[in-house]
Length: 124
Image (cartoon, rainbow, N blue to C red):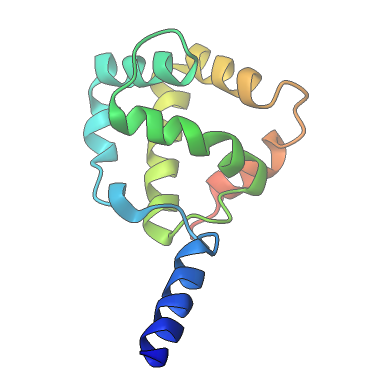
């Protein structure tokens, strides 16, 4: 019985620790499909800007955008880094005005933009 209690305490402590990476639930999200569909990309942009409704995925992405921007995606898995680079490239090339709105919303003082652009340009 004592062993079970100790094991339960260890599991509870491990579950309570903050995650080193973001939730991998969307690692198989098809970012290229999103980028290739301008209407869908625009809807996600409106979600991020709180100008329109959000899908469940959009809500989850919106929650991590500020931290990912400020930390250059420090908690991102390699797959998540790839997905973010794909989506941001899509915004920058297909909806540059909306991308600028997102940047202004998330980094109004341009404190993180240069380092985030370096992250975007990196290959890993």
